[in-house]
Length: 136
Image (tube, rainbow, N blue to C red; front, side, top):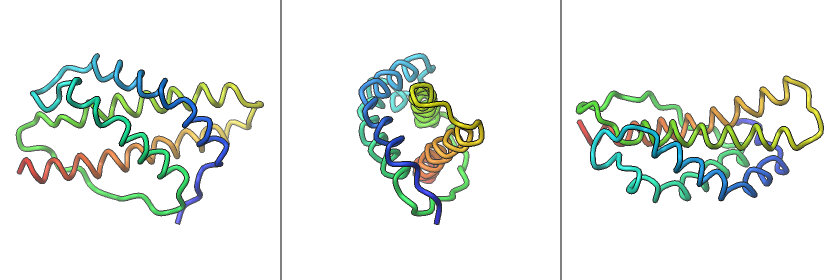
């Protein structure tokens, strides 16, 4: 079991959902597409579902999946850029939310940052691993 994030923090992040979505899409469009499945016009349709999963995982005390990511045999894994962009967008929103709150000790800010990063990384590894197994 793990400690869920403070409900108020998750709610503030959820209130920025549209902004996170827009930034995720913008970052995704900066990435070089490695093939048709990595086309930002295709991947952007998954952002809302991914955000739902991220917010649910942040509220939950359930353990995160621990998968080792296998390299995709073709070397053109479409979800690598997707999750890189998503992590950047969600962490950016977290920093903005933290800046709006009353000053917090550095260890609290760092713990929140690490937890958001851990959640996004765990979900990314799960999806990256599933896709790599299909590619094999």
